[in-house]
Figure 1 (spheres, rainbow, N blue to C red):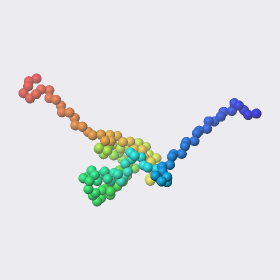
Figure 2: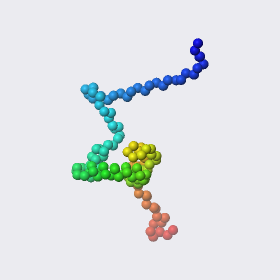
Figure 3: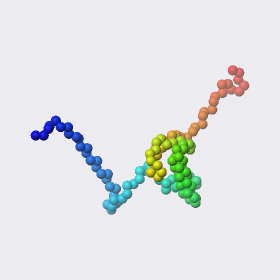
Figure 4: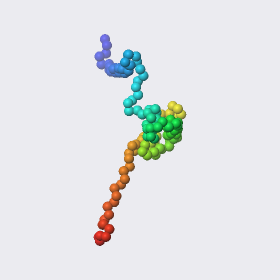
Length: 129
């Protein structure tokens, strides 16, 4: 006779597999990138547009060197203070070298500093107080 007082462990329902992304002819294709993710190619195009829309030789190399330098600084634990990008610092890290996983906190990204309003004079010129 089975023990009816034995505790039953609940079984977790298996999560359904994510739906495959298919092309128009039904062939599976690679998962598309997040629509809000900025990729390097798009960054290059935006930089070219920001400097006047002319494809300047060296833009790709300059952007890649900049990204490499920023990555190395973060790997060393340096804080980046780069307005208007913001102030970035390592919140926590795990692993070493190429397998390192860094969590970066970013503060003030995209903020535009507004000028302080001019102070009002206590009295106009020529007025006695």
